[in-house]
Amino acid sequence: MTIDREQQKRQAAERALTYVEEGSVIGVGTGSTVAYFIEALGRKRSVIEAAVSSSEQSTARLRDCGIRVVDLNSVGPLALYIDGADECDPHKRLIKGGGAALTREKIIAAASKTFVCMIDAAKRVDVLGKFPLPIEVIPMARGYVARAIVERGGNPVWRDGVVTDNGNVILDVHGWAIADPVAMESDLNQITGVVCVGLFARRPADIVLIGDNVMP
Image 1 (cartoon, rainbow, N blue to C red):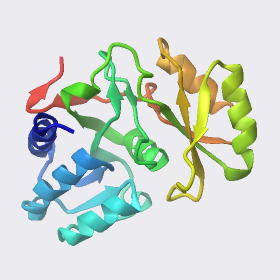
Image 2 (image 1 turned 90 degrees about the horizontal axis):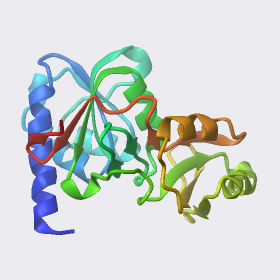
Image 3 (image 1 turned 60 degrees about the horizontal axis):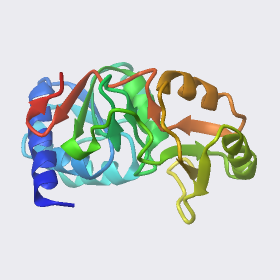
Image 4 (image 1 turned 90 degrees about the vertical axis):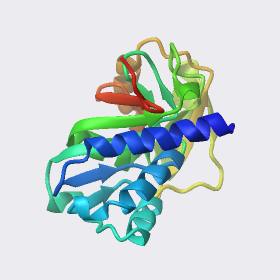
């Protein structure tokens, strides 16, 4: 990781703060860029009422910064969700799940009016799929789902030793150039045993920040 990329992450995190409305409850994602955002948010924690967190890791960071964490069920729809991504295409469709928090991230994104995604320039791609696609799977279905993925031309690799906050496993799928991410997301969702697919295409980001710049 170069210094330039880290600087871009910090810049994106600071820019994301400008979308936070006073007195609001916001959704907060997971990952290295989000860690910078939580750090920045902690300096202005009195601005928000609380946060809904996508992972136990982010929950711990938020609480360490003095930010109250609440359950999504207790607050209903959110005005804003802030998160990062592993890849982003020109249509703001994403691959997420490198941190194994994709299911909760997708739930919060779906429940939010505006999804602001923070990335560095290296994560911008023309076609999704260079980064292996994470898929969260019920443990007993791992082999079955893997075979279904192979039938679709993918090369699934079990992320051995990783258990999600939901108690499931992750298959990282290599070898796909995802020309139609909306169709692929819908197809993979139909495989029995799949909990969540790391394609955020049916609900893409609304705003993508690359460093201090907004992606057109």
